[in-house]
Length: 69
Image 1 (tube, helix red, strand yellow):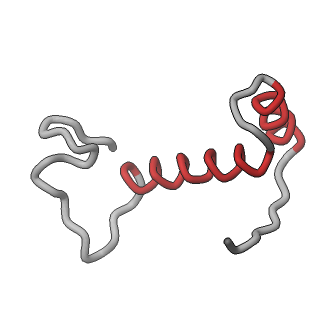
Image 2: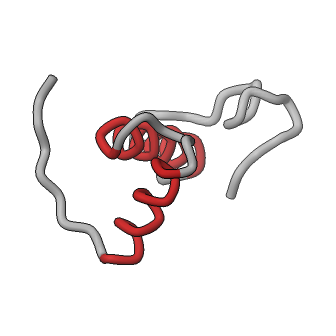
């Protein structure tokens, strides 16, 4: 797996450390990987569309009547 180095504000580091301490994640690496993945999925479903991507009939979130703007 590729390694990535990031710099985050202290308040984010504290929140990640707190989640690890509370047992939400096994360690910082798992926490950052899961939180980043979750953020990317959220961005993909509510972020800007690619130029060649069109709205699908089943909605952006997989439900016919649910769209995120």
